Amino acid sequence: MDDRWHDNNADAGDPGLQVPPPAEPPPLRSKITGVLVLATLVVGFFLARNAVTSALLFFVILLGIVMMHELGHFVTAKAFGIRVHEFAFGFPPRIWGKRFGETEYTINWLPLGGFVRLEGEENPTGPRSLAARPAWQRLIVLGAGAGINLVLPVVLFAFALMVPHQEAEGRAVIAEAYPGAPAAEAGLLAGDVIISINGREAKNLPEASRLVRIYRGKTVDITVRRDGEFLTVPVESRWAPPAGQGPTGITIAPEAVAPDGRAFTVTVSVPPWEAFPQATRLTWDTMVLARNEIVSWFRGATRPEFQGPVGIAQTTGEVARSSETAAGAVSPLLELAALLSINLGIINLLPLPMLDGGRMFFVVLEVLRGGRRIAPEREAIVHMVGFVVFIALALVVTFFDISRIASGDSVFR
Image 1 (tube, rainbow, N blue to C red):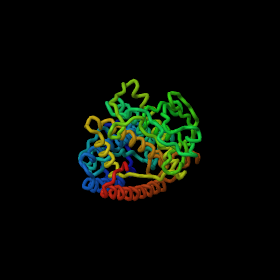
Image 2 (image 1 turned 45 degrees about the vertical axis):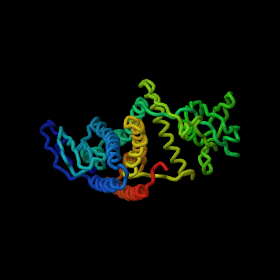
Image 3 (image 1 turned 90 degrees about the vertical axis):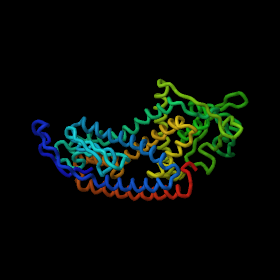
């Protein structure tokens, strides 16, 4: 997305008299990304079961998330008067393009994402370039995409709650409390029914499990029902428990199960005035869980697990097929889209080369240096190296995704 030209007539006279910029080849990283994506999806198409459904759902979900991300950059750049040369749907080669004003809107052949091409992302010589803007404006433009990705899940979770969907019915019951673990030391016993955790209702087994993981590293108040009475005890939720014990040292099961051994479910839908507050809380909880997962990597509790485009496509298909009806798959797919959006937002805020967070890091570094910039050429090299590393990592992850699918394994086991 580096800008290699500058229109000297950008601010001269009537905008209608400006000479349109010459056509440029698409950014190199867009070409490479497009080839990588196409190759992985072609291989995944032939290996994955029900690959057509999985790929189409994956396209729709990821396209929406990425285009909302790019829209954040686009809108804030326009608001600050930064020249936007291109707003692209998909990756080159180009199918169609139309110029409105000074911006060209394009549709490309590889429909997996998109990009916004701004003037002078590293080079401040152009008066309407991104790099020529004050630091606070650049930080807003660079962070807007990730910001959209962290707000969008509120809407997605809200619609997932409003759409009729299946929820587990019945509370979680402690199946086993391991001797010497925090729960057993606090006095919890097998057969105790979990009512709430830190004052938040645990209405079913997934909710109880999620709340325990949210408060990892803290002491939580667990309220249980035992022989018709309620008991609240403080229990440590550990970062690195022994294998199989869980953070508090218990295993839980549904309070009641059907004859086939599965938990009872009930169809529910939440009205909008309740759905949006719940969705806001769900979004925050999910970000806390993501943070806890990263912390657990460094504490040795878990190891990082990654998925590339093929793996995410497989996940999408499995989520869709997990419901008995097409309508029943809507809510789980909306939840998956919300999770992907949160992941994209968090990853882009990391101070890594090529990512939005990496570019924001250079802006912050400039401020700390009293306004002295890192040379644009050096910054561009750093981002290029980061991009090469990203492509290498994507290839490795894709290889393992394809190997897992070829062996018939699911992402859920």
